[in-house]
Length: 96
Image (cartoon, rainbow, N blue to C red; front, top):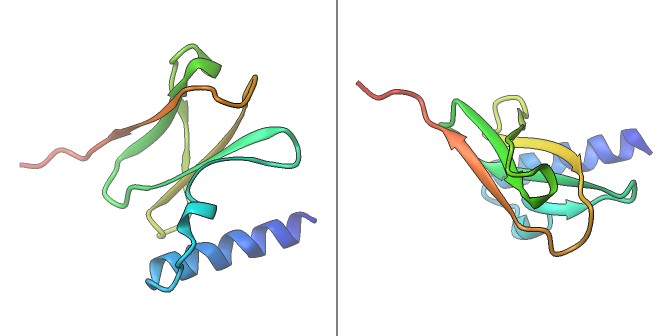
């Protein structure tokens, strides 16, 4: 099962980054997994760090991890219920 999930993630990342992923709404954003946890993904290629905040974590940042060189950040967390408010918080690199 895990191998299938990893393959689907790699395929979706590849399609997104080549401009041929026409169903990104099914991959990016927040989606409830079969495990009952929420999976968060956002494309932020120039971000230095990305976190998700919301009702579920008392608005304390939960860091996401960068998936290789795709520019897609991903993480998961326990969410108490559907309809929970969430937002992504990104940190940009300094521009001089």
